[in-house]
Length: 304
Image (cartoon, rainbow, N blue to C red):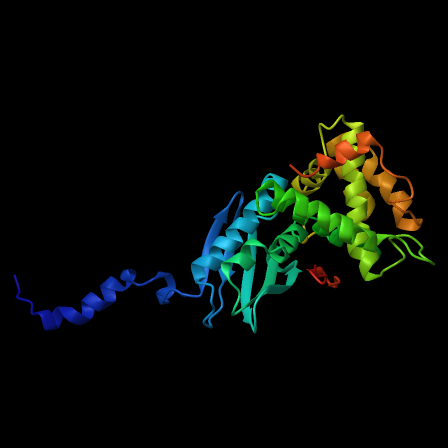
C-alpha cells in the first residue's frame, strides 16, 4: 500500500469535490429569488442598487400580490412568471408592463425611496398579474383586457384584506364615470380613448358581474366566468378572438351575459347612469366585493 501526502491529494480533491459548488459552477445570485405560489413559480430579479426596501420586503410584497390574484382566480393564472423589479428615482411603484414572452413576463419599477406602506397600498403589480389570466385580443378589443385588470384588481385586493371595501367604492364612484361614452362615441370596439379603454372596460365588468349574479341568484359572479376562461387555457400567451373567449366564460356561469353585453357595448353607446340601479341590483353589486397593448404587451398606464 502506497503512502500519500496532502500535497499529492490536493489537486485531485479539488476536482472530485466540484459538486460542492452550486449547479453549473456558478455562484448564487443575491439579486434573484424563486417564489412558490398556488399553482405557480415566480422567478424574481431584484434591484442591484441599494433601496429603502430590503429584498425581503420586496419579496413579501410580490407574494402578497400573487396571493390576491390566486385567491380571485382559484390559482395563479400561469404556471411560471418571470418578474423583473427595477429601481427608479424617488418613491412609489409604477411603470408596470406585462409581456407574453416565455408564458409571462412582468417588468415593474420601484422607487429607491419607496417604503413598506407603499407596497401595502400598491395596485400596479396586482393589475399586471391579472393581465396574465386573459388571452390576448385584437386591438379593437383591448378594452376588455384593460377593463378586467382595472375592475378585478381592487376586488381581489379587498377580498384578501389589502384594501378596504369603502375605498373600493370611492374609487369606482370617482373613476367609473371616466368610462362613460361622450359625444361621437361609437362603442367600446371603436372608441379607443384612455377613459373608454380602462374605465369603459371596467364598467362592462361591473355590469357583467351584477347581471351574472342576478341570473344565478348570486350563486355565481364574474370571477366564475374568468376562472372558466383561464382554466380552458386562456392566458396572455394565447391569441383568442373575443367571441370564443366570452362563450367559454358564459358556459362557466350557465348564462349568455358576457356575449349579450359585449354585443351591446362594443358597437353602441351606453350610459351606466342612464337608468339608476334597483335595490336588488345595488344588493347584488355589493356582493361583488367581500398603457396600451402591442404585440401581447399590457401595461398599467392610468393613475389614481
